[in-house]
Length: 88
Image 1 (tube, rainbow, N blue to C red):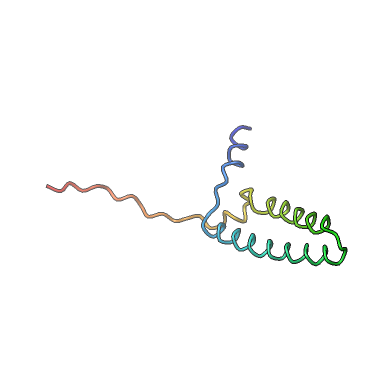
Image 2 (image 1 turned 180 degrees about the horizontal axis):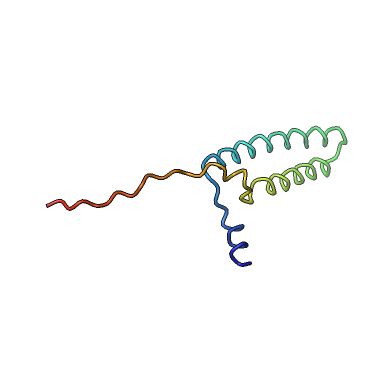
């Protein structure tokens, strides 16, 4: 049980997953900001504006922060370790 929890909290994602998460955060925050402004303007309410922005941010955190499997599809291929040579 502890190893499952530790793996879940470790947060290892690959480079492509980082790029995807970054793209998702940028676009979702822009869309959420625009949507919250429009809804707040339409309802003449700052509560609606900030509530929509907060809800979008919480949903985005749930979508991006955990290391979901979609962020670990492309593991890094490291070069093999070279054995040291004796130079005399």
